[in-house]
Length: 382
Image (cartoon, rainbow, N blue to C red; front, side):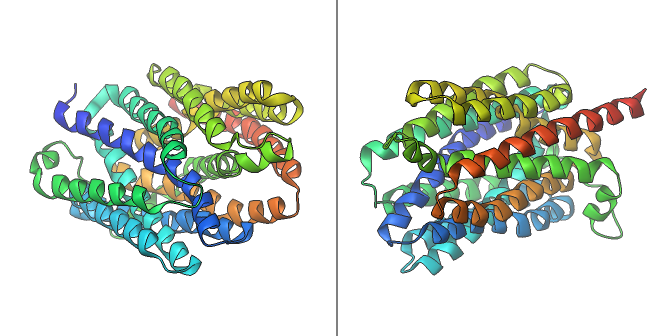
């Protein structure tokens, strides 16, 4: 039974906008690169900074959520997120943009870990359905923003968008500061003598879930942030924004399908395997239409993974869900951080196809590993 329906309604709306911001960044990083005449390697640093900020800070916000309450942690994270947008918008150089991306990523992941954990706390047995729906709406926002921005902004413009982002996070700060009803359903963390994350990683399944998330995010960022490069190498110039929307639109199908499962962990290995096949087709098939279909299949396959891994971590550690979710988000951020500079080097050297070939291999290996991890977890419950 959902305890406070009003929170879930607001959280779902927030996820719609967060998806818009996330996909907008995937496009606007290219705009910023043009505006500053930066190199592809510098572009990689910008993207990497977002995930580095998320990786370093998200566990701090997880601990804040456990100790001070998830409502307060969400308010602080929303402020940090808005501050990052201010720095990006006013940055006089690439270095400052990288700093702003770092701050933006820190706030984004810190806010997400607490907001999604609160959806779980508020929703009981409906948690997976609501988390899946939130992630589906995230994808809806991600579909809309690249198309809208491509229509209204020049290829070297980016500042107008961040004004909207700043206003949005300012409103969220006020909401989480003053709506104390959230505290009535937020699960209080189990007191720990040390940091909660140390207790969590002693469970052998947690590092494996972290590895699955790390590889998933690393590979998804290869698909999304560098999609334009792949299509340009195939002689299909100008398809980047449209194909980015195709990917996110397809991911809605996957996320909505997964949200109908009460326990979604069983589909995780098959999602990785299907994504490997779809990415191979993306490389092999000719023409924009066939490549778009392959990309859509990849979106359907990869779409459920984020929410499923988040749900799995919170469900396994309900007494420390904020810290558990923050660890999983940390892992994804780590994957994004280490992949991005490498991807930039691949692209600068014209080795885009080698990049996607490596992604296919990693997806296939992760599918096999995930199968045995899920089987182990099910065996523990019998």
